[in-house]
View (spheres, rainbow, N blue to C red):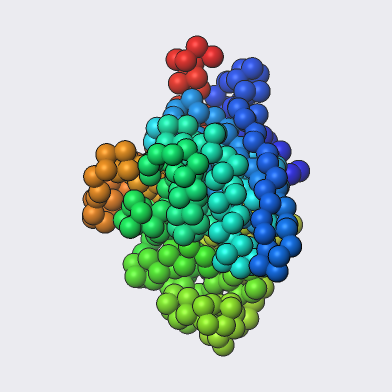
Length: 410
Ligand code: GLU
């Protein structure tokens, strides 16, 4: 199964539970638009190289398409379609007035210079300029893209269309209209959701050991925030490997080690482990914060954590879900757990439209109730209907999307 087929499987199972008809399921199984372009850049050595570039606009019933852009060598069209669909679900789970979209460039930014990355960003924005915009489709960062890349894209887009339009993209640097709190928002939202579950289960953070797979924006901030809240970080990894230490790891030391030595695994901070080992290590909370399809049929039964917080998109394959359920593991699904990122993107978009900017306290005081209320709604549905949290999140979102599609006469 490719990632899009995995999305469709999850969709169909949830749709059955709320009695959606075949026509509606078919409508939610295909994106509205797929935009595919080839972009060319001049390499520093004078050669020209081309990359596949995508934007998938999945569903805009609830508002303009919204979702990040990833630069990744494996970002194929199936992935981008699946990720666009998950964005539509995610925005509906947290009740923000946006639809779902996703973009990608199939390239390896680790092999490109800063100047070459700038060209990829500018070429993407030029190629997509007719299809994106503040009221149409609003991109943001995703895997291996960041605020600087958003700044290049904003600049190129505004030059192309000939007007100022800061709300056409989110996740920008603060000086260019970005929002306070956007950087840590994905992790912060996840922490609010996790804390709500921990409280419900009557557990004490200081008794809970955390393993974080992926030490990019989401993974690092999650480790930092959870460490500050009293949890013990016992394992962390990045694309080059991981480290495990039952005595606990300091998130800032991990970050410094990654910066200076290229990987969290390189600082002699504990036992060296692989990414695969991290998923099944001794811990209470597992946080996949890297790529999709990490927990599968072949490794799910070895997971030792009792809670999984999905900060990555699609880290659990559908075949793994029943195994995790059987083991009574609480899986906080991506469409809820990592929705803090797009929620603060929504706040950024609102601020850009108003040209009136909020403090960090304003942002957090609006983010926290959205995440907690969304968790409560999903948790209650899962309890009442004996569903997993993922099934409950999907049916909550699908009901909201279908309601507006019907109001629109579909
Ligand atoms: N890339 C992030 C996600 O998958 C954020 C998207 C956004 O802010 O639009 O949720």
